Amino acid sequence: MNLKVIPMNHFVALEILSWRYETPYDLYNIVLNDEEVNEKLNGSYQAIFDEDKQIILGFFCTGLSAQVPAGKAADVYKEQYIDIGLGMSPEYTGKGCGTEFLSFIIKELKQMHPDSLLRLTVAVFNKRAIRLYEKMGFYKKDEFSSSTVRFITMIQKS
Figure 1 (cartoon, rainbow, N blue to C red):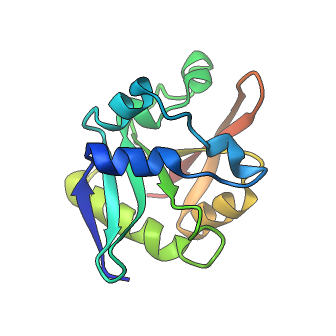
Figure 2 (cartoon, rainbow, N blue to C red; figure 1 turned 45 degrees about the horizontal axis):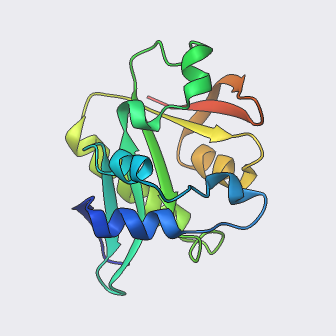
């Protein structure tokens, strides 16, 4: 894949918000509404484009947009890390694309924040993402729950 980062725009936000994941990953299905479009356009989101296939492969976000509200309430984000959130098109999940996708995101973020460690938040049931994150040098730090889902934070090893 020939990946590049493009700024999030209205067209890309609409495409991403139309993605639908199968159970149990349907937690990541987002309702298409003005609030969600505006969230994607708040400046913290970047799209990842595969130039070879001319498709939007996924996205990443940083900062507050990458934090789960229940984690804020549980005080798991008090240490200084670069919080990252990411999503991959459902047609590419579970097909061996994750390592290249996450490696690309990490490389991009390290160029922007060379001296910072990264933190991810992931649903506990998402075993394949957790395996990928561990493979890429992240370890479990904290655990918390929302009203329906258990989450963990994972920190990049220094």
